[in-house]
Structures are given as structure tokens and as C-alpha cells.
Length: 478
Image (cartoon, rainbow, N blue to C red; front, top):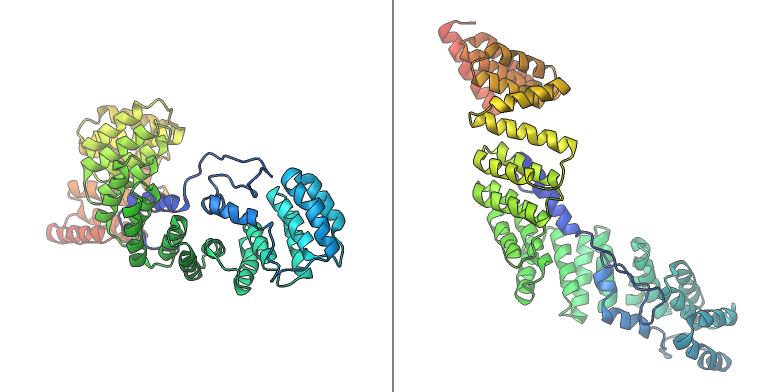
């Protein structure tokens, strides 16, 4: 996301990823209703993005009601057609929809009433045969261009089939024909939002709420549209109102935290996520995000608590995320907290993938070296290098260990080897230069620092270079 907080290093990726995942919604176990079941219209699995609107009982009532008639504004039927519908079709609609489809198909002619085409389309729609439903709704519209219910159900079935762009025209035509209600405007808002037409989505959801002011899903759609349009203050105001009415809704707290992160207000985002945690609705992903936010404010102990709870919540099933959290702690020199997280990860029953195991070993080695107990760590690092001599991170860590323990030749060798790996060249040159400064070889150190700056200019390295150059001039040492 464009406006994610400008936090350092690992925090940025983790927070942005978590925001995106929360805004999109996590997949849930799908539950399906049998196609064509009484009272259903092409039901949608619970995890589908349209499910909350589509499976709403009121929405289904509207669809079921579309079997009725509005004689003053709809296609007329001849007396013979009326009799056929009343005597043959109507009873079958309640008793045997398969026979109803067969009977309707036999009644449809080029000059027959569009009501027959529409009703057959409805039956196919209810039975989840979306292709035939579209065909018969379109046929009804061709016969009677201002057939409002046909336009409306065509828009619905196209949206149900994931053809959001195509659904806009029949939905807006329904509104033009005077059929705009909460469901039509709400579905139109959803369709616009899915296409990134955020201002239009906002407008549609506002209209939907005129008809159904208490509809939580429409309010939620309006919030999402406002967030997408960067209208954060309005979205926050609406969320505050919704949270007062529905404090148990985890989505609301997540969205509120999302907005505060977008507005670079980490402390407020923490409050939202802690509330979510307090009501027992914090997912592992939310807890990892909470830990990241605490780390952005240097609250190491609170971050550790969130990370540990995340591991507990998912039963250690995502060790890669736990290792990433450990990497954040190590990157901020939170050695005590990192050690506790290492222990939690190691105590998990889930085996680490080979790449995660390697990452964790390096993190443990780095923490051990920083704590002055690197004897075991260096053995691990050398074992890693035996398997992969071009592991730049392990080379740098080994160099740090040897440098700290006065084994300068070994340290210099590791740094030189790391400098031969493009990704680690700049960092290795700086560390090698620091080693030379310890030996008062200022000119050689300055040369390495200049090379590092050409590869990866950094202000702190530039300041260090200037001090080394000053020392070189003062002492006249190479």
C-alpha cells in the first residue's frame, strides 16, 4: 500500500502484508447449500467476497419475490398465456421446478410474452445454471426493453457469476427505470469497489443506506470505499459509530487499525488491535501485526507478548512468521526478547522448513555473539559455511565473531569472501574497514568505505568515512 508507515527494515513488509490480508479478508471454510433448494438463489460459499450481501435473508426474499408480477409496468400476457401460467406453471414452481422449466420452454416463442423468458431465467438462476439464466433474461429484455425486473435480475446473476464489469449496465438501467432500492445500490457499490471505482462506490453505498440505514454490510462497504478513496476521517467517524453499536465485530476494529496505520498513527492502531485482542477475536496474523506495531514504538516486552500469543494461537503452524518476528527483534538488538522467542519456536511441535531453520540458526548465532557467548554459535556458522561457502550472511556473522575475539586474519578472510557476493558487498566492505581501523590502517579503511559508498550510499557510512579520512590525515598512517 502506498501510504504504509515509514518504519524501518522488516517492520514495513510485515505491516503492509498484514494490512492487505486484513482488508481482503481471510478465507474461511466453505459451506454450500444445495442448488435449487427452496428459498435459495445460487447460494454463495461463506468465504466469498459477495457472501455477506448475497446470503442475506432479506436479499433472498427479494429474489424469491421476483416470481411475482407488476402488471402496470411489465410485459402483458394474452388470456391464453395467463391461463397457461396460472394452470400449468404456477403450481409447478412450488412443486417441481424441473418440469416447470420444461413447460416454460415449450411455451416460449418469438412472439410470446417476455414473462415466460424471464420466469425461465429465474428458474435457471435459482438452480445455479447461470449461463442459461443470463440468456433468458437477455431474451426477455430483447422482447421488452424496459422490463425492469429482467434488468435487475440480469445484473444480479452477472454479479453472482463474478462478471462485475458486465453487471453495471443492467444494474444502472434498473435504477433508471425506477427500480433502485437498497439491494440494487448496495450491489452496485460492491461492484464499483471491486473495480477500484472508489468514489462511485461511495456514492452507491450512500444511496443504499438511504433505503436501509441500519444495514451493517452497506455501512461496511461505505467504510471500505472511503478508505480506498483515502477519505480516512469520514471512514473513522463512521467506524466509531459502528463500533459503539457492534463492539463484537472484529472486522470493524481491524479496519480502524488499518486506517490509523495509513495515517501513520501507530499508537492508535495499537489501541484498536488491543481491543480486538481483548474481546478474543485477534487472529495470529493480527497478533503478529500488533507485535510489529509495538516494535515500531520500541515496546519490546509488549511486542514479545504479542508474538508469543500469535504462536500459541496458531499452535505453531506458521513457524515462518515466527522466525520473521524473531528477525525483527534481532534487528532491533532486543536480545533478551529474541532469546525467549527462539525458545518458543524451538518448543513448537511443527518442524521448520529448511530455509526457516537456516534463518533461525543465523539469528541465534547473531544473538549469541552479541551476548558474548558465541563459541557454540561460531561452530554452527562454520557448519553452515561448509555446506554453502557463499552464504554471505553467515560469512559476515563469522567475521563479526572473529573480529570480536581478536582473530583478525580469520575475520578479514570472511569479510573478503562476503565482499565477493554482490548482495553483501557493501556491508562486507564497511565491516572490513572497521577491522582495519582497529589496526589503525586508516587510508586502506577509507578506500574500502569509498567503495562501499559507491555501491550503497548511506549517511552514517559517509560520516564514518569522514572521520576515518581525518584520522588518516592526522596520523599519516596507511
